[in-house]
Amino acid sequence: MFTYADGHSETYETGDAYYAPPGHTPTLFAGTELVEFHPTEELTKTMEVVTKNSEAAA
Image (spheres, rainbow, N blue to C red):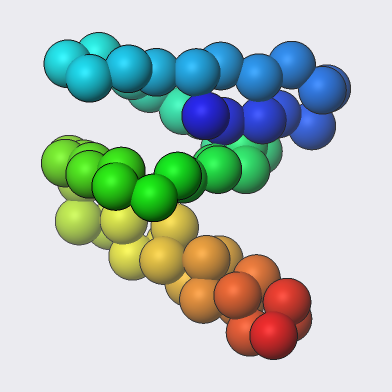
């Protein structure tokens, strides 16, 4: 499930393909498996933000 800043959320199920633009917060449940494809440069930027947010939450 992804929740967006405007409050709406989207839930995906097995076999779904999705695009989540910037500004979403993922919620993953036990047993969730993901396969994600990203352009390398965009993935690097994304992981920098994820790491920063994870460190701030700890």
